[in-house]
Image (cartoon, rainbow, N blue to C red; front, side, top):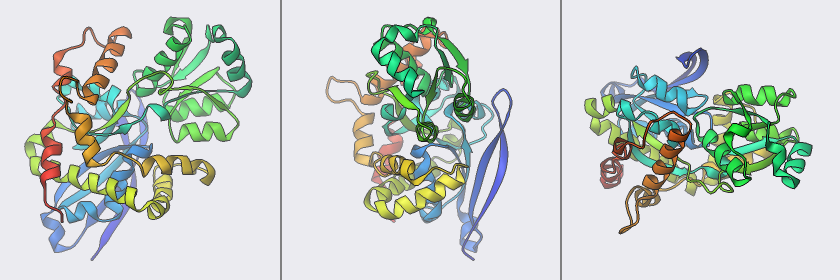
Length: 349
């Protein structure tokens, strides 16, 4: 009978109720009754695109999976939802993932390096003034999604200019709220990521700094919930393989992927102009293939793995802002390369 899709709004607790967009992709045929149900947690920005792609193109169905997907505004509420087992697998930025160490979250893959898309945005005149005299940052009011990937970037960008976090005023805010307040004339700077960065720049605002300039490693990662890993490890491996197949498809079929990305843009609840959407599409069709993810997950001789180095930097950041007492060895045990090894070993379907 084909594929049925339905949209619904769901609510995830993150201190207050928030609307989350949800998609069910279900094959109602007799064969689908044997498929493994799997709940995907996604974010509004481009690294979650492979999960949407795998649903739309039937890749998950091919791998025996019956997925549903919920889109969250950032990684923190996804980690909070993990405490009550509201999802099975997810795309999350590494900083909020690290905060889930006590929940037993499993880092199964590395999507890509996202430092370049973590931006500190300001009005053109303010950015020009700070570029001439960084001391003008002292006392700045900055909208920040606290304890997030972007918060980590802000600290690095300020440090690069000789400014401490204690020298500025943090205005805690989720991404869309930050964008709305900033374009309304509030605050001096906003920490944003796509699609909010593109929306801010569309209004004439300028980038002051990003994670690359700050010299940071800020990857997004594929995460498996420990409950699902125990309940259905085979399905978790197939999810990872299917998602990476979607990554490969987008890399090889950029024109088709661009068309599908516009559908993803609507699904996630944004209406990004084509001129700005192209930037996201370029990033979404250049996510790391399985070979590069394997390399990022494993040490190179005496050199620690890329993901280990990234975790160490992020954990130290959390110690500095008081979210952690110390860099616990348990944080590094979140990385489990066996999942991507098994996914890579599966024969093609």
